[in-house]
Every structure is written in C-alpha cells, then in structure tokens.
Image 1 (cartoon, one colour):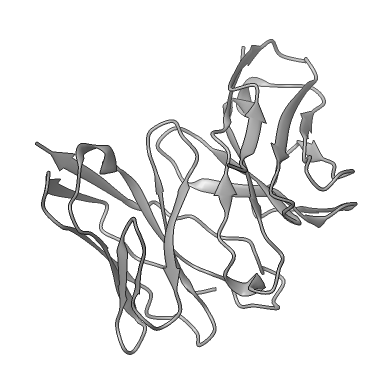
Image 2: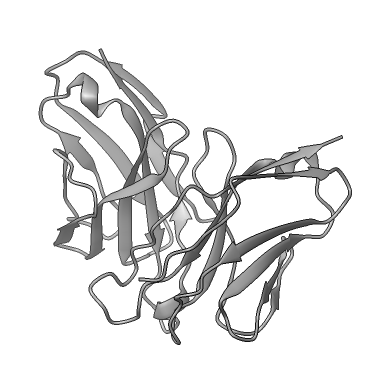
Length: 116
Length: 114
C-alpha cells in the first residue's frame, strides 16, 4: 500500500549540528506539509508545498527550511540545531486531483528530535 | 476559517458506541468537516469527512446537523485500540490562501476502558 515515510524515527543530536529530516511519499501527491508538535500539544503547520519548486512558510514561524525538487520528496533542514528545536516533526501529503477541496491529509509517523 | 470546539476528554466502555461531539457554529457553506485521530507517538490518521450529508465508512459514521453548526463522530463499537486524541477540523475556504492547510486544535482525548 502506498504510504508516506519519515526518517529517522528518532534523532538525538548536539547543539549546532546541521540536520535534515527526510519525508517521502509514493502516492504522487502534489501537496506536502510539515507540522511541528510538542508533547501533549497541538500540531502547528511550519511549511507547505503545492508542488515541485513551490514552498511556503506555515502558520508557526520556524528556523527550518524545506525544499521540493521532486514530487515525492520534501526534506526539512535545520542549519544549526538548538535545544528549542526539540519537538516532533510530522510530514503529510494530500492529493491535488479532481476532488481537490476534500482531499484528506496522509501523515507519516514523525521524527522525534532531541537537541542536547 | 471556522474554528471548532470539542470537549477535552471523554470515556467510553469497550464495545459501546463512542459519540464525539464537535461544535463549528461559524462554518461557511463550502467548508468541509474532517475528523482525524492521533494514537500516542504516531502521526494523525484520517477517519472521515463530510460537507452536509451524513457519512459512513469502515471506521466511523459522521452525523452533521442540518444547520451544519455541529457534528458527531460515532465509533459504533469502541475497542481499546480506539483510545486516542480525536480532532475535528473545518477545512479552510476553497480557493483562499489557506487552502489545503488544516489547523489542528486540542482535540478530544477518548479513553476506552474494559
């Protein structure tokens, strides 16, 4: 079954390191999203993309950046990780087909990032 | 975008129906109601969505009031594995700048007990 994959599942890294969180989907979806979620808290949209070479900032300001060079791939990068970046990062995708106004989001299982 | 109001928590006995309410009194005519759930440490899972008619799938039923100001998600025979946070979300206006960006609130923590 087609799915959306995030790696790594868990990441513990020191302050100042550059990291890239990977997200790939095999469904051919045009739209992809990154959400950030602290434990027990709401999901906040930090980035989204409506297609190749399209990226936009979300509702919550984030120091991370994203790129969309291929339809199936939407990586998130932190140039210099800090303890304040400790959180769970969730990637999602949705279709941009005929029923564009009611296409549900498909989520990956997230990357739990801890910056020490 | 229309906001939603959900009770922070609910309990349900295993095998019984779980009825999760959601208020969305400011919903506009072309906004859909979505339900997702999030089981601990996993990504949210899509359950069902609807515009104005009641909907049913293999997971749940969605009942939307005639005035569309509220809805109820029904899990007909709750199991322990249905324990999760359930989110009721109204989609942003189609064609607007927020299109496709769903806003997740606090949701309802449903606990199914034996």
